Amino acid sequence: MSQQQPNPQTYTTGYTTGGATTDTATIDANARTVHYKCGDCDQDVPLKRGEPIRCRNCGHRVLYKQRTNRMVQFEAR
Amino acid sequence: MAPPSAEELTRRKKLEVSPEIVSNQASTDLPGHWPGENHEWDLDYFKDNFNVQFHTHSPHDATFSLTGIDTSVSNAFRRILLAEIPTLAIEDVFIYNNTSIIQDEVLAHRLGLVPLAGSRDGLRWLKWYKKPSDDDEGSGTPSDYNTIILRLEVECKWQEGGLARAVAGETDPDKLYINHNIYARDLVWHPLGKQHDMFPAGQEIRPCNPDILLVKMRPGQKIMLSMHAVKGIGQDHAKFSPVATASYRLLPTIDILKPITSADAKKFARCFPRGVIRLDTVSAEDVANDPQLEGQEGEPKAVVDDPMKDTVSRECLRHPEFKDKVKLGRVRDHFIFKVESTGQWESDELFLESVKLLKVKCQRIKRGLDEMIR
Image (cartoon, rainbow over all chains, first blue to last red; front, side, top):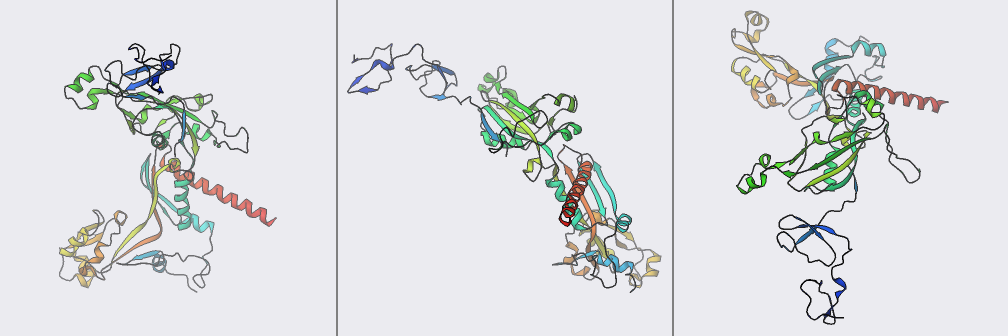
């Protein structure tokens, strides 16, 4: 099944195989949300897989990934 | 052979400081150096000659003189003060979150250098922490008797209405943000087990200087970390050194060989730091005693007031008018110690501790020698 014109509601990440986009990348309802920071307004942007990479507050398209919350050990030397 | 005169003994003890060279540096009070004299080390002789005198004595800054002691021993004290007296310092930093602009490793290093204070008895009670090693399973376990846990959890935020003020052009961080400066006082100690009793209220583990600036932050930045502080010695890392500096200098001497009077006397006094040279008036008695002062009664005369304040800059040796009139030197067995504590221990305590440690080292050598002979 292929779409020549993607539905405006379901956004695809736009990777194409032979000129046709697949819909495997449409929004997955039970995917894990990842929090990003907007590069313009510093708002927290929760995103799921397949969602448009865009700030909900200001529409900026540059988002930053948050620092890992895994513990890092350093020697104070 | 006749014993050396008192002048000869003081001459032997004096280093000569000339414009370009320092001579007579090496001590000669050793057995076999002077024919017919016995310079064997003797406890009673040492007891009679050794002397300690305090000049300034504040908790974190002490100046005192040791006289009648060999350089090797006083230098040993200095080196022990710098590198072998144990203190507590942050060793491991566990960073959960750090979005400030200071990199994790730099922040960890800064934290390590913060001097910590706490109950002296508690610090003595603390045992050494051994790093975990591969060949010894279960080694390096932190416990209440060898590890102190501290935490730093801070977040910078906008003040109420701060954002509006920033838009209006306000740039003073104190009027815009909360927690934009993180100081050493923000480190929070989390006592474990027996540490509650060993470090009672008022003597808890805390930074000696609460105003050390650790990080500067801006709204949205956050630091969450915990630290393990352990006991260590300066040999391992400078952060464990209990002193900011511990040094000694030899007592300077200034011998005025020929009288320096009138305008020369004022110039001579200016060659030294204030308080080293005093200007006296030439009295009738001085003139009667010294033919060189003929007709100079009432003129100012340079007299050494306090050679301890001298820096031995040798400025007076540069001027031809003082040639052969003055001799600079230092007393070889008069050590003016200056011990500046970082705050964990008191300066005088630290010196006593260094004496104790040297004693322990000597006993260890003695035991080793006994083993060898057996």
